[in-house]
Image (cartoon, rainbow, N blue to C red; front, side, top):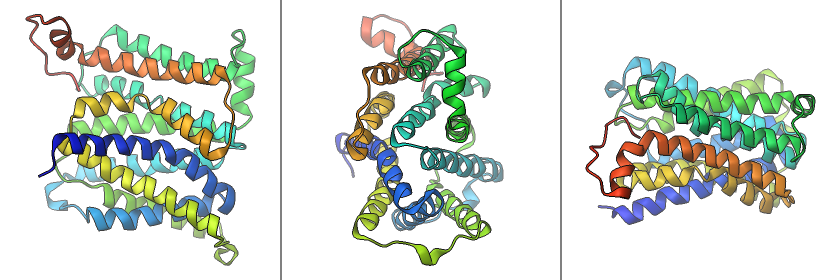
Length: 314
């Protein structure tokens, strides 16, 4: 039986592995190309997850969840990975990843839409702060200019668009899973579907597999990216099942800053003060949304009051 402390640290390690995934995926796609690199990463991760978890018991899962949940998961993973792969520069890949980290704030709004969480006006405040962080990064700390924001987005609308769509889809997936999910862990099955979709895409574009370069550095980054992706999901599952969930959820909201820092080291990029300020705003907005949704449970512990916690927190 795993101790709660060990399981919690497993969950925290998943956050670090996912943070490293940004830089590692970028390294792979720069060497092997976006289509091939991402396909190979997910294929190796799929084999790893099948070895760890195996396939779920489909009889215990609703057909609605299998259909809708798998679709949301597959499309999200492709949006996120290709948003990074199609970025024109390493700097842009890091900026695009911050757009994806709108998902914590969007998840709160999705939970409201699914009637899993009561609406509170502070959710909109938190969402506004997160968006302002993205705008601040795009403006470089200068005055508000919608023309500049539009120009930056149009420099690579595919990457920025995929990142935003991915954040939206993942927030819906989280809310949908919370309502319709079961105790069965479908992650290995979902990854099988992602890999299948990627191989079909690769074959449809007529990719020449004979051109693959199996240099030592290419193989290293490919394996490292697959491990960070696959083991990240495995460690997170252990943490959520046996660890301190509140600690893990709170820690996950620092992901934009952690991911940017690790990507900076892996990709050898120097990020401006403006970028860090914007990333912190995205994180602050997410934390505010989380605090708002959990305040009824947090307040009694902070102020030792007799407030009765509600059951709509996460």
